Length: 417
Ligand code: ASP
Image (cartoon, rainbow, N blue to C red; front, side):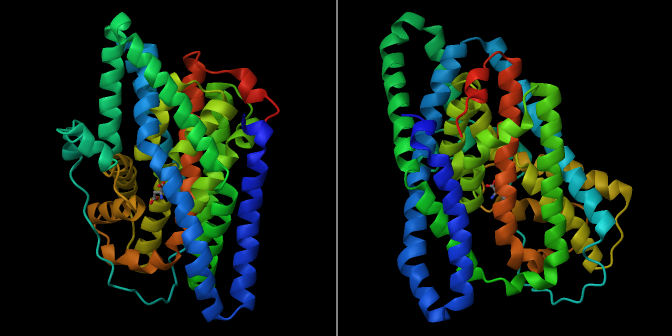
């Protein structure tokens, strides 16, 4: 069974469209009491079942596929090369993304002449220092790391195990066999769970529309348009350029292949929860082999957030505008550096976008309460930037897989939509 035969992708797209239509119709036509009931008895439980079902696959999938992938590479030099390229591309694209956000926002000036109440109740949370995050990559207890879903720690354990397996070759064979069976089982479980994705996507999207409403967007339309515009520029200009120049593949085909993962990312607002779908797409629709995607994607879901970086760029300029503070070129450079580093420093923290933003604001001396202004519209933007984050992870995966000879053009080019 593969993606083509089950034609799940079309159903996922349909789920997205139906979620938007159902949500809007309910919002416009039904009284709030009925809407509350449908959210409570349908949208919320169905959405949560789907979310939990894909989340439950994250840790087993990363452990098994990354251990196997590392063991298959088996060579520390190649592994180091893949790691170096991946980190380089992740940091570069994040820096480009935030520059786009800053530039567009400085041109549009979404925060000027805005008469708005500041909800000062938002308290910025501080992330741990970068050094702590790096030290924390090595867990004292691997099981605790898995239970708590600490992705960088899980990645560390899996790579170490894979290297050890490669080193003891013959004696590792029985365990490799078991891991390969587990890998096949887990991949099939993901496909089975994906059967409920269309309904899950529908429920999650409709729930957002019904419970958030649309009126809250009005005062902040310019800010939202600015974030969405910058996301689109990154998606339609930066990524196609990288795909064409560095991976020499058709961007159009790329997006046709990866859109199911972007839709699931959009509806769940979490790169981490979407990881099983992203990996499935990389394997069966993109043609990136496990040796590469088992490394690039879990790492990307944790530290590579182009969409989030864009929001930070726009939000910084917006909040400065609202408070009438001028930003210098030096401030801009600070934001680029800070946001890029923050993306690593906040690895694995939920609701990471706004935490990173509060770090950036503190760094350049802007009021953190400013986040209170954009909080109300952040849900929709979070959905959109998560889809972009996932596209960014898959773009990097394509480049690295291609350059390492771990790319299957037939899978990429197959008529598998
Ligand atoms: N929701 C985003 C993601 O998981 C992160 C964020 O911007 O908050 O990719």
